[in-house]
Length: 358
Image (tube, rainbow, N blue to C red; front, side, top):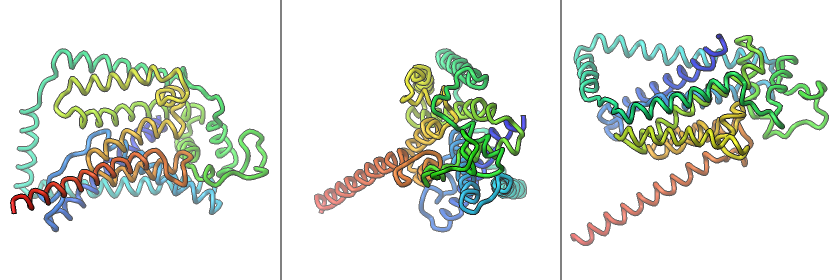
């Protein structure tokens, strides 16, 4: 139960706190400068997919910082666990304290409180009911997604061919250190490890969660983490569906049903993302396929380039990339080039209109 609480609650608190702090800081800067999306004090509110994706990126970033302390400074696993736990707790307390301050200010400010209540009432009155087709689509998707999560959580879909994550986590726990012995032989590494592989932090994060919760590595790595990852992935895809089919719930839930079907069908080939999510969701490639890639696309389409940068950094901490440049970087570069090209095209059109009118 403690492991489930850590796995589910940590990304929620980290993501919600980080997005809330960024939103409050953006509001203050926007009001002071008078430009940008926060100039009027309003901006798009983040959804559950935003919270989970940002929370996972921050959790991975904190784990990578603690992991590097263990790799290069020789910290024990207990020391790494303490560093990660204190960092997560500090971020959660900071965001929680800022939230409480805002709530207290809202209670004292009658004008803001009335505006907040009016906005809440307006949303409740303008909320549309789900049609019969939309309800059936939601039910079918939910049943299929729950079945996938249950199968993963019970260990029915795990494929460990060529994977040593569980053995690596067990070695970390046994040696109370990071990469001190070969997980297959129990002896120190003879030729060492490539630096790019050594700085990947996912096994350390699993070992830290096992140390904090007391959960068995096999249970946490192959069952709990992949099940939570798949659920978070569907939340991120739902957020992307809100953007692609804004205002059309039918198309959104058809899109979600299609994503769910691709996960089922992709389980037949190891090279497909569906196989990563359904059969080996504890690997960094699964995190990239289920969380980082769709959220990078969503962030680029919304113009949230700083969130895409978070995905780029998280991918560099999780999987082998080309000097830290992975799939998320190239997706962001592609969307950035398109955005820049459209801006130049609009600028040229504006100059042409001015010359014509002159």
